[in-house]
Amino acid sequence: MEAKDSEFTLSRLRVGERGVVTSLHAQGIIRRRMLDLGLVPGTVVESVRRSPAGDPTAYNIRGAIIALRAEEGCKVYVELL
Amino acid sequence: MGLTCQSSGKGVLREDFLSYETKSDYIVALAGNPNTGKSTVFNALTGLKQHTGNWPGKTVTQALGNYRHGQKLITLVDLPGTYSLLANSPEEQVARDFICFAEPDATVVVVDSTCLERNLNLVLQVLEITPKTIVCLNLIDEARRKKLRIDVEMLAIKLGVPVIPTAARSKEGLGFLKDTINRVASDAIQLNPLRLKYEDRLEVAISKLAGELEPLLPERINKRWIALRLLDGDYTVIDGIQKFLEKKIVVEGFAS
Ligand SMILES: Nc1nc2c(ncn2[C@@H]2O[C@H](COP(=O)(O)OP(=O)(O)O)[C@@H](O)[C@H]2O)c(=O)[nH]1
Ligand SMILES: [Mg+2]
Image 1 (cartoon, rainbow over the protein chains, first blue to last red):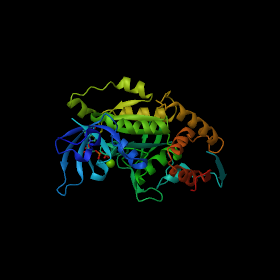
Image 2: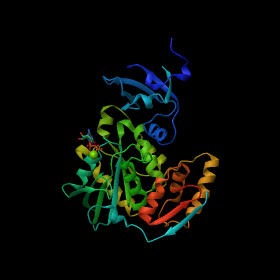
Image 3: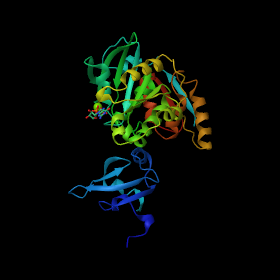
Image 4: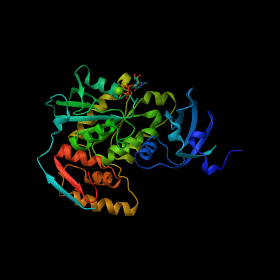
């Protein structure tokens, strides 16, 4: 079983898994950047590929493939679908 | 928040934003997310009459091109491809400073018709700065191929600005786009841009701050937008005011 749902973040999705964004734990420019990428609550995100080094990970966000580093992904809280 | 302002000149002319001298009737900006066909639109409209340089003071490439349409000479300015105008990368600053301070006669936002949802973020951000906006629904051939149906008329009504479907690679819709650019640039179309309404206490603050900015800045500058940026804690907009309007705005309680 996974840990508590409210603690689950994008960076913990495995390749092929999808999650729906519940909240962003970031402020200022980083938050702005995430919102501009389409990471608003309710958005479904799929983890599509992980780089050989394990970081960054490519996600499908509203029809575009976007790479996020783990330190960014861990600020995006999701509910596993 | 209290504001004071010292003026040291009349400010930069919009021609000063361009790396190449033009004597055109209209200056038109081309904005869009990366990979929406912005360069294809630019090339199709301007043909071989292009000039590339850098944005003043930046290592960001600027492409300019001219074309004639309906007796007018138009200079098209290719802005950097961005998802946003607000996150302060050099590209985003260039794009928004141009739209806000150089005030193009029209701004065309090229969007990917197959991925509208993602692209409308930038459209809303541009509309927040300038009403003289045209949405170019590019890659409409791809949208048709994917059997996506877009209610163009409804989108234009909701956004309050012209929406023109195009397939730039095959030049579909570009004649209509050029007609529309001239009509928007010459104020021949009544625009009614969608205006985002924020929560009440924010709207109160915006009005108050915009009111304070009103006497400090030239009439042509959108004070509501400047107020929004300041309330968002984005003080880079003050640098823009200083640089392009040669006015020094001091926000009390904030050391710039
Ligand atoms: N099918 C189709 N392809 C297009 C269209 N416009 C541009 N393209 C293609 O989309 C790709 C990206 O175009 P480009 O102009 O470089 O995009 P930019 O990054 O926005 O400047 C290129 O391969 C173009 O040939 C269009 O309307 N329809
Ligand atoms: Mg391009």
